[in-house]
Length: 489
Ligand code: NAD
Image (cartoon, rainbow, N blue to C red; front, side):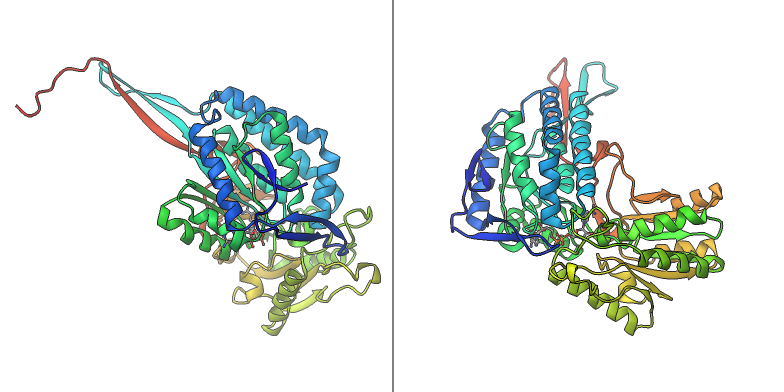
């Protein structure tokens, strides 16, 4: 069956191109999917444009749109096992993590479904004029290009698709070419839930050929992108000539700041989870550990001891705690960052070379790696390696901790560990990041905004602002007693 979804029809790529998808855990063939090119993308944009300009969806009452999203949430839960398995085969991540993801995805649809159904954020404005009233209403932006990465394929997609639909938009989704299968399944569920044809369109394929045309096309009103910084810059530039609305969720190099008065056991445990979850392929990974001087030696020794014991394995290995990297190219990149760090003076405490276990030979595995005695000038400290690599720096004072934590072009997330509530809050408020955790790492809820400061991007996903991203505010003024003003007499 063809896998591009355009105007409500499953379609093959016009040029007949296909792409093989292989599991990063062992190289087995997961599936062969249609590979869109510029002509397919143009057809998908035309279908979305038509659905938005002439179809019923933008004018459908918000409460009804919300109810459709709630149906989608139910269908996601019904198909959880199939979706989780597909996500794990495409990404190599542990099945249990994919299962958590599907639960979170259903919650995201439910949140935006309820938000839409609750009437949204329209308001009446007091004009101060007895004979005039004024309303601010929120309308859909139009045709949205949604471009997503491979690390949390359906989760990142749901953060865009659910609010875009809640607001009444039509969209073209371009998921990562490495992980297309759950996006295909989502299109089936949207159709099953009753979404009109043409509102949701799917093109699969490479960024430059299937994705870039979306950013340039004058019929597209908005691009919402999650991915790397370099691609984000390209997308912003490509969208500039047609002055599209742009939202960018880019990378991070997130600090995990541990003061000497932190709860030792909890802080060690979370420091490992912060960076090694999903082999570090998490935009909010706590990849920079900043430890107060007097705690440094004992803390790092314990982190290293436990990091060495983390078991690597494929998605269905119940004993594995983390999986492979997404591709051979990506593993090469991570290795190069570690080599550069060592050349610049970092001290290797564990990991640092490919595992020799024959059972892992066909996957792109790389072990949890700890680099100590790091400095901000090292590329492994300031660039996003997006792998299981923890760099450790020391600090003495609160001011030094804040300065080191903020010494990055990124500003996505960060954490502070201290049992001194005042200090924890002071540091949290001084970190230049869109999310800060106190004595925790990684939790998020769909009710709270997610997004970056600085070069981690702009715009917000989730929360009320995550819906507003897909809306245009329109002011409607009504004169209740129009009389000639005789302006020109
Ligand atoms: P990527 O930038 O390589 O690709 C992301 C998407 O953009 C893919 O679908 C890709 O095909 C597409 N693309 C590539 N070039 C394009 C172009 N010229 N025009 C249009 N589309 C193009 O990123 P990735 O490697 O898939 O994902 C990893 C990155 O994503 C990391 O940097 C990570 O931090 C970031 N990320 C950020 C968040 C967040 O919430 N801020 C969440 C997840 C991932």
